[in-house]
Every structure is written in structure tokens, then in C-alpha cells.
Length: 127
Ligand SMILES: [Zn+2]
Image (cartoon, rainbow, N blue to C red; front, side, top):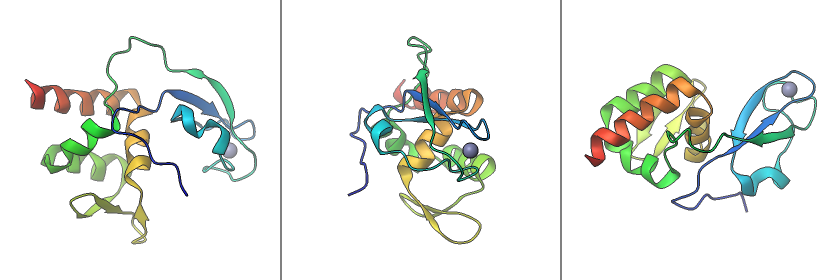
């Protein structure tokens, strides 16, 4: 069964590919389950450490999910990741393949600029 994050889980561990240098964020629970690098497929990623605590701009999976009715978030996902919404919680890539929501969450959380934009949407919602 694939890993399913709990609503309060946040991807907080940085991993890097020793072959191509690609870096991304995963959930701590995923560290033992990682397959080959998604960018080059040549090597298994290595754990590089956790995101600095207190960056304070992470949005949990549950909060991210709650934001999916926000047009500005859908626009961000489309613009940055090239994914289009299929329906409420489902997205597809340019080839029409469905992309898991947790992948979208940690792709956005793995980029400081995108993370900031999701965080701002989250904060404007909770105020
Ligand atoms: Zn790689």
C-alpha cells in the first residue's frame, strides 16, 4: 500500500540524488520507502537532513487539502507544476496521467517560493 500522509503531516526531510543532484522533500515516514530518483532514475536518493525548523511556512497536508477549493491554489498548481484539475482533489499531468495529491503537496512544499505562496493562501483563509 502506498504511503498516505496524515492530515497534520508535513514533508520535512530533504533528500538528494547522488547521480544528478536533484533535491526534493519527502515525509519522514517515506525515507525508508524511496525508490530511484524521479529525475534521472539512476540512483537512490540520500537523506540530506530536515528542513530548518522555524521556517514556519509549511502547510500541512490536511490544510493544503482544505485549500483545494481556492482558485488561486489551482492556478498555482497549474502554473508551477503544469497540472490541471480533474475534479475536487484530482489532478492530471500533460499526458493525462493522474498525479497523487501528496506528490503535489510536497512538490509545492519543496520550493521556497511556492511554499510561501501556499502559506499566504492558507493564512488569508484562516484569518
Ligand atoms: Zn537523479
